[in-house]
Length: 100
Image (cartoon, rainbow, N blue to C red):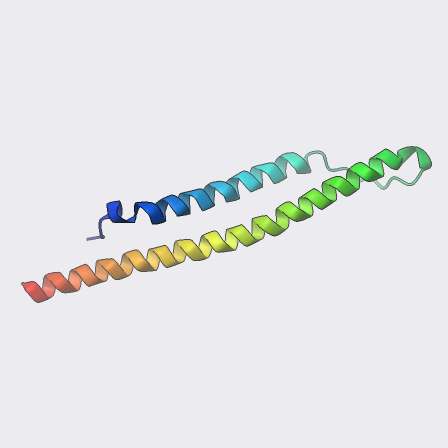
């Protein structure tokens, strides 16, 4: 019924790579977020804590931006691949009907 997935090895490999990157970013964000400090540091002795908070917040912002972007790209690529598979399947079913 479905077209041969062997002919789509490259496309499926790209999809698997995109999913792996999204999962890796989610795990990276989880481990960076564990070090996040939600307390407000205002005294002079807490200058190093303020720097750490700023670094973690900057890193989390970068991860969130790329994570969202790559998730959308992965989803769009998955849907396009699904439509391609369905189209090829429909095309093959039309050929079977016409030749019989």
